[in-house]
Image 1 (cartoon, rainbow, N blue to C red):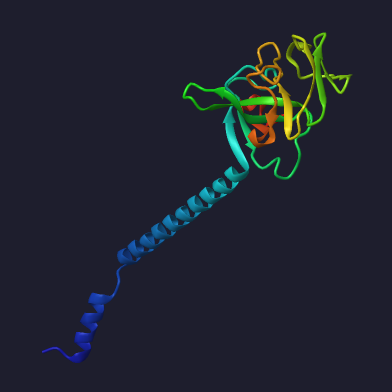
Image 2 (image 1 turned 90 degrees about the horizontal axis):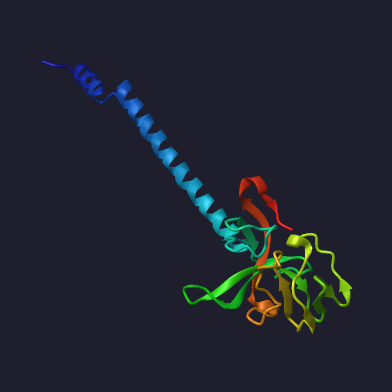
Length: 204
């Protein structure tokens, strides 16, 4: 015959958690906490990435027309909102949608340097570029010369005259295929090179 205190004692013994049970519960709690923290961190990283991509776009250089400033396979960042808050300035390296077609039949994006702003007179003669009658000093030009002759032209309103830094191979505003670049075709300003790491940094 069992007394009441003996029955209570046996029930309590059955229900009392063991050290192993407590350890498993603690591990389960830590695992769940770790998972929640990981999910939180991933969500924050994705949100930050989305915000960054609203302002900057990664772009890969494919052509030789901007050597020696930019080279094929350089990985650069394009400031997409640069001209929502400011104006295109002399020397800016811009990415724009050209009239040229790529292999898929879409309009090809080009990277060039802004040389002439709206209303300015641009001329090419004697291996140099003249802006409003003044010869430009362009240390970034590969080989230091601009081939060909181009009679003075006036840059239209809301448009720009652009040239590649490698003038020997660049197809740019000197050609009818590219011509002047209107403001609404400019996608942004190249501001930073990420790769290769040996030349990473601001692009000018």
